[in-house]
Image (cartoon, rainbow, N blue to C red; front, side):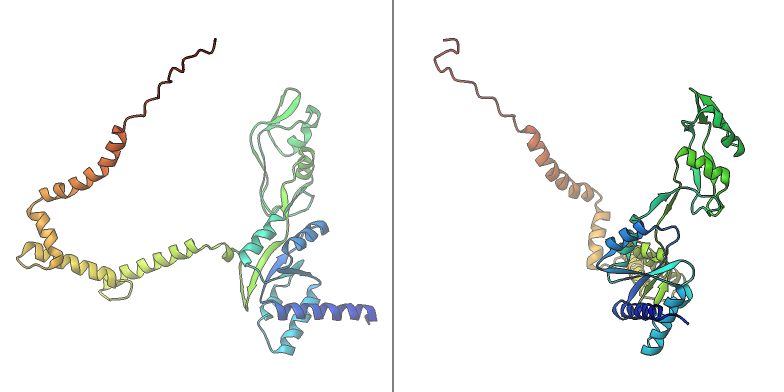
Amino acid sequence: MPSATKLEKKEAYHQRLCDYLNTYERAFIVGADNVGSKQMSDIRAALRPESIILMGKNTMMKRSIRLYCEETGNDQWAPLLDQLVGNVGLIFTKGDLSQIKSEIAKYKVGAPARVGLVAPNDVTIPAGGTGMDPSQTSFFQALAIATKINKGTIEIVSDVHLIRAGDKVGASEAALLGKLGVKPFKYGLEILKVYDNGSLFEPAVLDITDEDMMATVSAAVSNVAALSLACNYPTLASIPHSVINGYKNVLAIAVETDYSFPLAEKVKAFLADPSAFAVAAAPAATDSAAPAAAAAAAPEPEEEEEEDMGFSLLD
């Protein structure tokens, strides 16, 4: 049976988590693999006071959330239960989700490649000098990396794709990267899911901008309008196009017959006298050219001649 001290700590943790569930409506589920204590402290300080980071055992977090839902009858936090797997934590926030996500992304630090670690990203060694002496060519030979000796140092002939994302780091790769002084991986809090008022979604949703939304909606409206026009089925999206197409048809009939209406008079006038195009365009061109001509014709001010004051500097 747990001691009284442990029970008190569990009860205090439960109470604190329940207070957060009552206070906040949005949260991030974050992975904390390979995140150091100093790094975590910096992230906590950067997110205050709008956001709070809560870490703990998954069983304790699940228990507290489950009891909270049962006691309050509010199941909006229940979707988090299935997501609390692995080394994860919760970030409760009242701020803008996109801004908080950007702030979290700032605190990623470089880390060396360790043996047996699963690579989170590809690692490529660029061609060029390594600064290593010729006696250490065995590392490159073990990895089948083409090298040459240039000015007493080992030089890599071409770019080498050393590790692929998802592969485990081997002993030779880790040793070589360590000798080259390369820290190929960056670690920080990784946002796994985003919670907002009972909805759970991927963090990529936060990267969608207003321009992306407008482009998607515009494309959808265009498709609806095209389908409606093809089927002769009027919709709000196709009515403007139908009205314009109808106007074009009526205008074409008016041009070919004696029938006319006010909007067609101007078109008929231009077709009857094509020189009207040039006459109408000439005044506009003249008006725009006049200021430029006036500016070009303006004479430069002449320098004033110095008056003879009746004495010399050598007097």
